[in-house]
Every structure is written in C-alpha cells, then in structure tokens.
Length: 247
Image 1 (cartoon, rainbow, N blue to C red):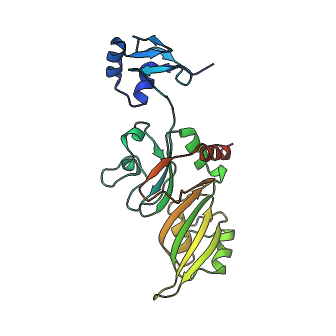
Image 2 (image 1 turned 135 degrees about the vertical axis):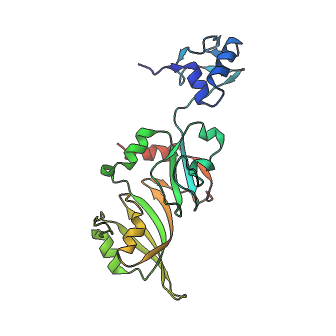
C-alpha cells in the first residue's frame, strides 16, 4: 500500500506556508493535484507520485534531509542551547524546515565531520553499539606517541571510570620536536563513542589531546573542499554507502 499524507502537511513540510495559509490558497484555487484544482487542503495525496502544483510551480516533495557539516570549534552538537551557538544555527532556513539533528556529537572544541538528518531510523542504526561503525580522527597530542601506545590501543585501554575500550587502530603521522614538548600528530579509528573518548584514551597513557578533528564516520568521509562552518547535502553515493552499513 502506498503512503498517503495530507496535502497541507506536504506543503507545510516543504516550508511553503503555514496550515492556515495553505487552506486559504486552496480556497483560492492556487493548488492543483494531477492537473485538477484542489479546494480541500486536507486531501490525502501520494507526494512522491502525484503531481502537486502551487501557483503553477511543481512541488518536489522529500521527507528526509541528509547534510554533511564541517563543524567548527566553539559550536555545540545540539539542536538548541540558551548560551552557545549550535550546529543547527549554522543552517539556512530551507534546511531548518526539515528539523534535522546531529547524528552523535562532537565536543565543543572538536572540529570536522558531523552528519545532520531528520531520518531517525538511520541515525539510530548508525549509533547503535552493536553496529560498531568506525569513526576516524586526526589529532595533535602533547607527548611522544610511540609503539607502546599503538599496542595499548590495539587491545583497549582503561579510562578514568574503569571502562575498558574496544580495540582501536592508532597510526603515528609525525612528531614535532621543535618546542619544549613533543607534539605527535596521529590518526585514530574507534568503533564506539564514549563521552570525550579520544581525549580520555590518550589521558590514560599520560598524554593530552590539544586538537581533534573527525574525518570519517563509516563510509562517509569529510569533503576536503568543505570549509569549517560550511555544509552540503550528501551525494546519492554517500547516502547509499551509509544505508548499506545499517543492513
């Protein structure tokens, strides 16, 4: 059975007007469905199949939105906050209409890849612990990260609350020994998302993360051309890759 939805809900969901405005437009004969003028704003329609027109322009309906955001530092991964700017504040009105939310979260000072969507099912499945969706980060760490840390992360380290992490893949990219302290640049892939996990993992081996960027989540890779604070919709290929991971 095909899904049906009220005509006014379709138009309001697309941000074209309020329910009262749409009711008025219907009475004025400004809305057609399959080339027939519709005066009943509560008409049940099949939005993905019916041809819905408002003032002669076709309404292309979609239920879900999927956005890749390059989150900047200082912005929180929430839909609203009284004190801080949120990732939703970075969106234009045409995206906010869909009421997207962040899939998971990045710390306030962490930058990089964040998926925003209103697809609750996809979000739940990507965040489910049993899915073990890998997340990869680049970090600058104060301390000389070495082979012993790679080995420790490979079997799991004990966090400050006693939790033992799942195995993680640590790669050393470079060392900066020019300053008073060694700063290591590393790449880390984890399959879980405990609170401040990457920072706490390095604290457990006596080191401190001073810069953290997420570069991938599952098959979704941060677009290198996307500046911090900017976003774009996922491509069909990117979305298909995420949906395959939940199966």
